[in-house]
Image (cartoon, rainbow, N blue to C red; front, side, top):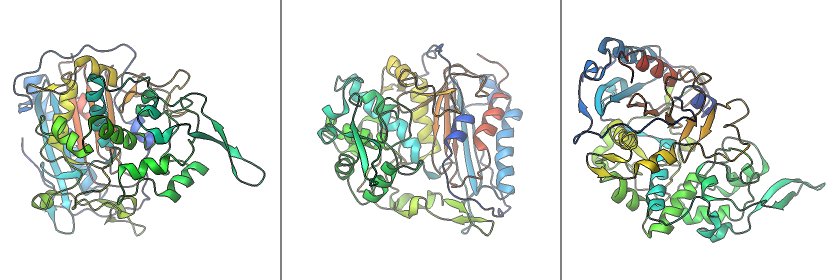
Length: 445
């Protein structure tokens, strides 16, 4: 595959930073209650380059993905993009357009390293399920069994006449299953407004200069935002999972990820920081300025310096990675937990992760996105029609700076998209890429 580079410097547009969960849901692939069978046994060596025609796709149609991404760059909507698709364990599309760094006129390349933010979450979920397979916990266990600081956490129930919080007991103990499906009662301090979110921000729960233990100590002093199991609410729950991985494994979180996931899968560019020798591959991140152009800026106040080792190893959003690394992780999942002979999970554990785990009565991610359910650190869409999807059994997520991926067990397909762009006015790269990939399939499964 060849890499194409745009020679037209993008003009800039305005926006404010926001991560739109509605966009994630609307642009993402689907699943249904009927589960697809796991794909046939993977070849000994996965992810070799192949023509689209070898796997039943049309190469000229698949090129429309590159053309569309180049168009977004030419319009000044994005700095640069890397897109990657694999079918039947073979890479059939791997292209880069635009710039890794506009100011330096550094072209985007296929080996660029990106801040993947919340695409860290599925990796943390896999770490948890490795320990689940070893019998270290049950999904029905109360979280406080492993985090004593959470014992008898109270739930925010409003304010009294003096404006002080009114608290009530949990109607049941938050379970690990609820923790892994964002239904345990925790919050983020970012995506909703409430007194509890204010408390998260005042305590600086996700302080980049703190530790996972510091985070747990802070959360242990803040009430839950809502009763466990009462709703899906995006939260710090996956950062909490990273802490549980440390406690159950006896290892530093990053060491566990390296030993049990990254090294076996040959994910050589995935870590909580970018070492000096790889800094020239690290993509600059951009936002939209009020003046109307792309402007280089770090997200979330610039608190994370990715060029140094991190004190706070965020299981919810701290990793950097490359397109190939994340493809290897996703292909492992599609293969039922194995890649190139390295087994990470059992096939039924992968199926468990990509099944709906929301509590009874919780019908979706919010009242307007009822077709989207949630598994164990993956989103799951159970209505292909409403989701404008093509296959049953797909699962996915995305990152705050625009990265996205999906896994389709029916078409035996993985797609990875990497950009570095904050802003509510991002072009619709997710649904665009999805339509253009599926229209290139000439031999459906």
